[in-house]
Every structure is written in C-alpha cells, then in structure tokens.
Figure 1 (spheres, rainbow, N blue to C red):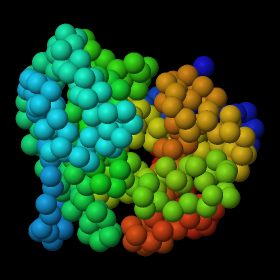
Figure 2 (cartoon, rainbow, N blue to C red; figure 1 turned 180 degrees about the vertical axis):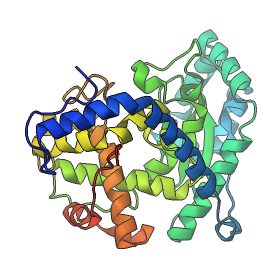
Figure 3 (tube, one colour; figure 1 turned 30 degrees about the vertical axis):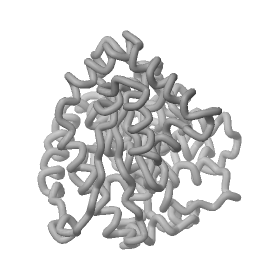
Length: 359
C-alpha cells in the first residue's frame, strides 16, 4: 500500500480522482525535494520564533526540585527511611501511599527490600550515569511554570521530585507535586527498558520529560463538553493540549510535543490533503463509535485504516492543525482558547484548509 492511499472518489475539494492521482504522483516525484525544503523552512521558523519572552521569565518563582532517588538509595537503616518519610510527607502519601499500609514499619520494610534488591541497585547506577546533571530539565520546568503562571495566575507551582520507580510509573502529577520516574527516561538504546511497545519506548527520553509534563498540566485548563463524544471533540481536545504545550514551550520542537519523528512530521505535512480527504470522505469527524475513534486517536505504531506507513494518533495531529488555524484566524488568547469547550465552533471558525505540498 502506498503512503496515505487515496480513496477513489471525488474529494471534498471537488477534485477528480485523476487530478488527485496526478498531484499524488507529482508529490512522489518531488518528495525528497519537498522534504528538504520543509526541513530548511522548519529550521528557519524555529530560529525566528525561538525567543523566550524576558517579561515572562522575569517573574519570581520558587521551584522546589529535589532528587529523591539519591536520598533514598543512600539511606542505610530503618531510621534513615523513617526520617525521609517524615521529611517528605507529600511524597510519602501521594507516591508511596503511606496511608495504605497497616503500619509505618510495613512501608519501611518494603523500602529496605527495594534498597537491597540487586537489580534496583544496577538500575540506580544507570540512572546516576545518565542523569548526573538535571539542571537543564529543572531550568526548562521553571521557565515552563513561569509561562503557565503568566497566562493562568491561579496556577499553583507544584513541588518536583525525581525518583527511581522500578518502571512502575513514568510521571505522577497532582496539583501539589510531580514525581518523575527517571528510569523510564533512560536512552532508548539502554539495556534496561520499560515494558512498552518499541514505538512508544522511543518517546521515553530526557528531551520528552518537560513537554510530557506540560501537556499533562494542560488538562487542568482544557475545558470540554462532556456531552460531546464525537471524534471531532477528541481531536480538538488533543489539538488544544498540543497548542498549549507549544505556547508554554515555544522553543521546543514539535517532535517532542506529539512524539513523531522529524520524518513522520514532514510526511504528514506533505500528505495533509490526503489525510483530510480520508477523514471527510469516511465521515469520521462526527463518528461516536469508541472503537473507530481509537483507530485514529489511540496509541498505535501506525494508522492502518490509512496506511501502515502513516504514524499513529493522526487524529490528534490533525486536531492540532485545526486548533492552530482557529487561534490564528480568530486571534484568541491562549486562555480564551482553553476556556472554549465547543469543539464544533472551534472547527467551524478555524477556516482550516489542508496544506497542498504542490502549491
């Protein structure tokens, strides 16, 4: 199957199949050239737009960033662990689940067992090697929180802890704290890997930590209509989430936000018209069947309903483009965008039009 196979009917833009086929063949002929141009343009765009606002960065913000994996693995006795549990009560409750244990001694016994586990110690040694310095992650998080605080003054800056989860959790977020399981973010080539499909495991690398956190935080501000269970509503939800993340992290590449490779992003933009034709001609926007929605929105190595070479989660990527067009054409603020729960309105007023690589 060719990449993004077209459906042999008249498209929504009233092109004949022969015209579509001709455009597609021209794209194949010039795909490498278009791809190179796209990369050049992307680099230029990134250089021009990658300017953090000094007014936003000039805020006073107290970020508590603590590396707990060191403190816990340096503990030697039950008294040491008891001290740490009392020193970090929020972590002990929200992450370790202290109140779920019949007694503090039971939790301490489990922590000691983990501390003495040889595999956990080897994993800890790997984390120490690959995450000797987390100052860049800390600084990026601080800047991100300043941006969120600027747009949403009610945002409460959470404490941030790093830890060794034993591949039990990648990120834990609540209103008051964030726990980063550093073992999840060891390089994809590392011998220790989480129990995830390869296409997902490759997104678990240190450059993805901050974008993942910001995207998760976006849900706090992302207003939705609970009665709208269409594919379009799901597309707009994720589109708003990614738009939020890009606004908060303006210097971060799209690939770290949506988790596509650069090649996949280039292919998607080059084939956006064909992707859109598939969604419209199959009447997917107002689909409510959860199984069908998952095919285009859920985690998958590819979107097989379109092509085995098309990346998964294409509905999310398309929703991001629609939301970007809505924000640009309607000139709404980030707060106004996130406050709008009406997916249909956002779509209708976006003026969305897929980009034609041959124009």
